[in-house]
Structures are given as structure tokens and as C-alpha cells.
Image 1 (cartoon, helix red, strand yellow):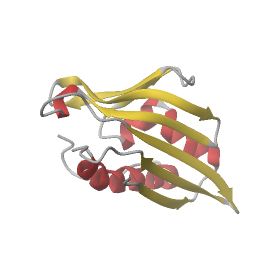
Image 2 (cartoon, rainbow, N blue to C red):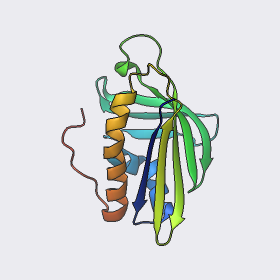
Image 3 (cartoon, rainbow, N blue to C red):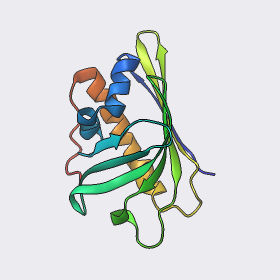
Length: 152
């Protein structure tokens, strides 16, 4: 099975990095204008909603929270929203955010795995994770994000 795995060292505390992953205003800055909607309780739904093909409230990604361990691990299933589907049902994969303090910084690991062999969202995910991770690092270290141009 395919796996996307990235590790970044970020000049901030685990609390600051965690905040960038779960705080709606910070998530909006790193995820192309989408906000996160979740109770952050295992077994409960999670959605990323923002501007896109279906207007300002496009459902980009949704899934189920698998684990939410404060400032350590955030895992959830991942399915793309209806506007990304060419036909059929969305494929499910898994996203794991793992945080670890290292000296005066935080090691952030992203693992996007459990891909189905024919999942068409693998390619777009592979290219967009670099921008999202770069935005997390830049936001935590400087208070702003990078300008990648249009999000649509």
C-alpha cells in the first residue's frame, strides 16, 4: 500500500503546532481557506469546509476522528468531498499527525496512508501536502503563511 510520510522540525512548542492543526482560524490559513469542523472526539465526524468548486461552503474532506491525544497525535479517516469525485463513492485513507518535542522545537510527522490502489486523490494529496506543511511551519514560526497564489 502507498504511504505519504513527511517530517518537519518547527521552531515552536507542541502547543503552538497543535493549535495550527485544530484551531479553526489557523486551519483556515494553512488549508486553502477551509475551516475544520469537529468535536475532536474519537468516533465523531470531521469536515474541512471552505471556498471551492461548490461555492464558499464546499466540502473538501471529511472523515471520522480515530484518535485525539492533546499535543501528541491526531488521526482521522480521509475522504474527498463530492465535487472531487468523477464517479462512484469516495475512497478512504487515513491521516495521522504526530507531534514530538525535540529540544526547543517540535518534530511534526504527517503520515497519509491506507490508500486504496485506485484512489484518484493520491496525486493531488502528494502535491498539496508540501504546501500545507510549509504553511504550518511558516505560520508557527512567523505568524503568517506563504502566498501560493489562487486556492481554487
